[in-house]
Structure formats: C-alpha cells, structure tokens
Image (tube, rainbow, N blue to C red; front, side, top):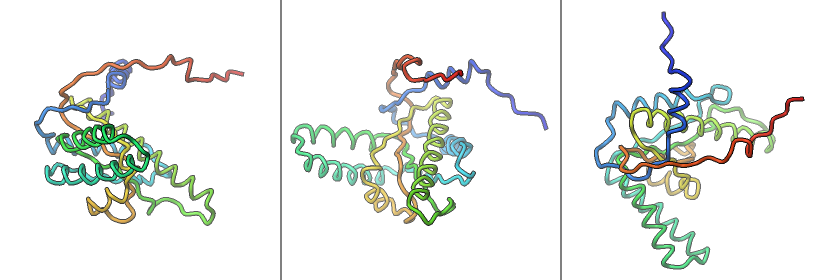
Length: 209
C-alpha cells in the first residue's frame, strides 16, 4: 500500500499560521459529511496511554442551541452578580455569550471521560491522570480546529463549559462521566482576522549545554 501524500512543510505551516478564532459566521449549515471529517481528524490526536478519553457532542438543533445558550447565560449572570459587576456589564457579557453560542451553525461540546484512564489510590497521581486526559482532549480540539480551517470553516474554542459543567451536562443530558471541557463554535466565516504573536525568543528557553 502506498503512503498517503503528505502536505509540504510550507503548506502545513501556512495552515497553522493562518488559523484564527472566528466568532461570526454565515448562516449556511456545516455539511454533516464535513462535520464527520472534522471529528475523525480530532481522533487522530495523541492521547495518554492511547486511551482516547475525548467525547464529542455535536449540536445542530436550533432549539437546543438556544436552550444551551440561555442556560449558560443564566449561570454567567449569577456569577457576575456575585462578583459585584455592574448591571450594564452583565447585560453586555450575557448577550454576547448568548449570541456566540446560539448563532453558530454548528456546536461541538468537547468532553473527557476517565473511564478508560488509569486509576490510582492516591490523590496526587490521580490528579495527574486527570490532567493527562485534559491534555489529550485539548490536542484533539486543536486537530479539529485545524481540520475545520482546511475545509474553509471558521471555529472558536470557548472555555465557558468549565464554569458551568453541571448546566451543560444537564441541558444536554450527557452521561455522568462526560466532563465538559470546551465548546467549539463552527461555521463559514463572516469575518477575517489577523493576529500577531509574541517574539519566539520571549517564549523559549534554549538549553544547549
């Protein structure tokens, strides 16, 4: 069997460097076939022990998108009120959150499960095992975002489910072991973005001796 043709380094780096977090989309839906290809790409990420602890919830139902956006927005409002944030700022933040979730043509809730990960009797090692699962799921999310970009789609990873995992789990009737980690919005871009990165030397420590 012949090896698959690989993109050149320049092609791959161009894809990585041109990906941006897109939050405004055109209304047309993401084809189900394309969505399946994105999810398949996600599953080729590296994972701890190769246990593949990622789980994905694909939401295209308009009613469910609005229900999830409203439930998460209500929790956000409660949290901001407890922080003493001004009513004007609360209204602004909750409206923005609702719009980002409810207007995206596609949503993917990225979850993890520890059911197939190793189990330890002590808290220290068990916490590290959980962190390994988190890292595995995050890498799957990056695969998905890059695959979306390659298909001409825009996407954005929202961390909001971390602040209300119980709300997400209840609204979507998820299995009890599925821990929401992120919410990826997807669609064909209605905006373009450029973003600079900090100089590489400010983020790297070279140890040559």
